[in-house]
Every structure is written in C-alpha cells, then in structure tokens.
Length: 171
Image (cartoon, rainbow, N blue to C red; front, side, top):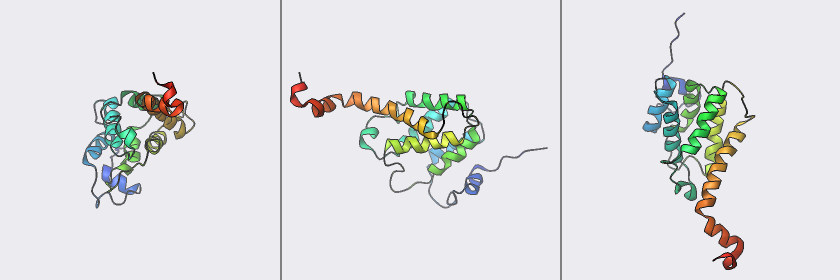
C-alpha cells in the first residue's frame, strides 16, 4: 500500500485555514514549516529556533521585543526541543498546527509574550504523541514565560528596585 503526502497548503486548507491560497503569507515561516511537514529539514533544533525567531517578531510587547529573542533564544528553544523529544512531537502535525500563524495581518499576531507562548505551546502540545510530564499546554507555556520573566527581571532590576524601595534602596 502506497501512501502519499498531501500538499502542505492543501492540508492547511483542509484543516480550516481556508484563506491560505488567497491571503498574503509569511514566506519565511512557510518555507521552514513546509520542510517540517515533508520531514526533510536536516536539523530539528535549528528548525525550532528559526520558527521561534520568526514568530517572536509577531509579539506586540515592547519589553519582550527589546529582549532580542529573535536572535538569542537558545534557552527557550531548548525547552521546546526537549518537549518534542520527551513527548514524541510529530513534525508533520506540528507544521499543520503552526500553519495558523502563516497568514499575515496588519497588526502583530500576539498581544503579549504570554499569549505567544500559550498559543505556541498549544501547537506543540497538540502535536505530541505522548503525554510525558505535561498535563496541558499551560505547563509548557508557563515554563517559557518563567525564562522570559527572569530575563526581564535581570534587565529591569534597577527599575524594579527603584519601584520597590524608592531612593532609599539606591547606593
């Protein structure tokens, strides 16, 4: 019995992304997702890094945006990659799940990094074949948010201390 892989765009259309043929799409994201769909990208970790980088540009949160996660996101990507390994994330299914972010809109896709991480975690969680250590996408999302929260705390520690202690806490 021979199996054929349905064209990626057609599969997205069949899964509810009905404007995939008529709307402007993010070509960079499409290219990497298409490679994932056909299982022909040579490095899974790098693919996740590229996907995270592209989608992080769609976060409408100035503090998050200024952190440079589109370039330096190794700790966040490691969490996602570990999730993929531990939970048997299917590349084809992940490409389909992430396909909902292909359509370009005039505004950014995610109002906050928390929303971004939750929606990203949903895609990874829904692509998992095993439930290994995570009871929901919320757990994965919270793990990603904790990394960003800690990074923001380091960057804005002086401002944070000023708010907490006023001028008394300054040296």
